[in-house]
Image (tube, rainbow, N blue to C red):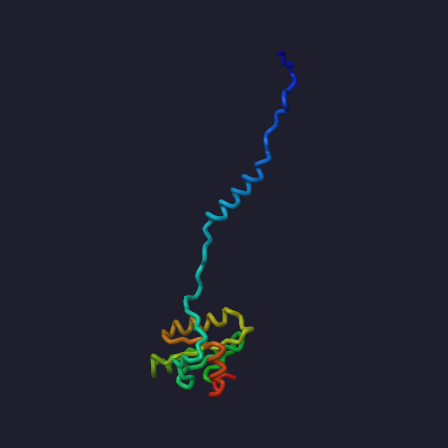
Length: 146
C-alpha cells in the first residue's frame, strides 16, 4: 500500500459539533454556581392585614400623613420636617410608648418616607406603625384618615 505524499487522507478537521453543547453546559454551570448579592435597606416588618387585630387605638397615636416632598400633616396640622421633630419630641417626653402612625400617599417618592423614618429613629421612637388598607378604612370612621 502506497500513500501519496502531499495529500491528506480523510480530510483532517477539528470536530466542532459538540462545542455548542459544551458552551451550553458551561453557561448552566456558571448560572448555578453564581452568588447574587442582596443589599439590604431598611429593616422593618410590614404589617399583616388582620381585621380582628386592634392593637392601637387611632386617637391615642401621633399621626403623620406624608402628602408630598416637604409636605407633612402631623395630627392634621401642616408642618415641616423640623417642626415635626420638635412636636414629636415633646409627645415622646410625655409618653415614650406613644405609637406613631405613618400614612404615605402612593405618589410620594420613597426617599421622603425615609427622611421621616430617619427623624423618628433619631428621636428614638420605638413604636412606629404603617397601617394596612383595612386599618385605614376602619379608622376613617374616627375621622383620623381622610
